[in-house]
Image (tube, rainbow, N blue to C red; front, side, top):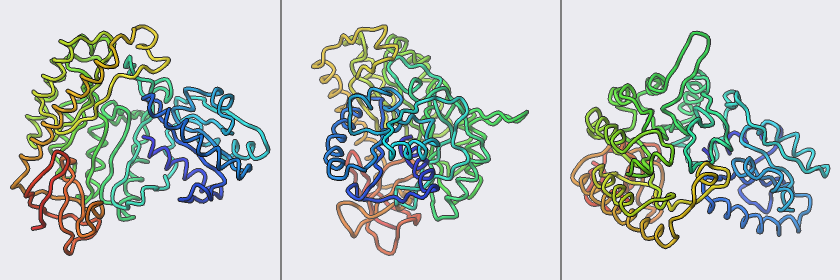
Length: 427
């Protein structure tokens, strides 16, 4: 989401005469796009401001801004405590950036963190900043209506609103015409995409099918799905198009129904297992990844063991795994005590990571001897003679370059694997 927001901001500013530089020392305007989901992310931003402070002391006219979720959460506090900061702008106020910057140049510090029920930036064609030229993110919605107890997103990004589907299709077609070969449709919960225009209703399965129909050479991914909302209709849409990648990120967060209830996730362990079973039934070759949180409030050893057993049962292909970090303002911070000791959180997280490493390695071993269609995304970091890309299941594949170039679809026979990578040869 932050990448997509940065591209929207870049578009707004380039339209008013700004240019982007890769060298921070050359910049007259420095914007830090922030995340508040975890405390570590905010800590890194504050550390970054120390470095930027030295730049500003050398060039006092440099304007420094904090944008995004951290801006929304801390608001005026950033201006008051971080003297290097000139402007603070929330996720729904990016259109005001040119005016706020002009004010800052005249010595007026400013904060605009007003949330909107309508803003989707649908009319803005984002400036692509990844330099990849092959894959890109396309935001289809903003905000979130799920009030998960641990999560700050609804408070800093506002209520859920879906973007006009015609603007999404237009953006994807523009990317295709520029040579991009893969798009990832992103939203806090893509399954709840629901655009209403007059009598017209568009839900996510229909939008996904419309995007896939643009061109069979365009790969389509999406993230993130919510277990309470993912439908059989979506799974059948995925199964019906070869160019919709066979990978679903389905955050579980815990394997314990008791903990899921405290988290306000609105599903049980059994519901989650039913959705995984539906994926396996309707899309047998689909990879499934997940998120897991270790040490949420009141989590017992039995709750933790249920998480491990769910992971083992599901056989996740990969996962994002974290220790619980209390975020100010959330329901968990207001209502529950963060009562799991740090050393227990760390031990449980390490057990989750160790299990997932085994599951990931096993998943990769199953691919040995199989041929995968890989979209080449660039040169391997370890060897200039090799390219890397991903298969439909979102697994990274490394292979000798040969005559292939970035942007090509390449058939690769997998010969060996690690827990993170498939390695093979072009056939």
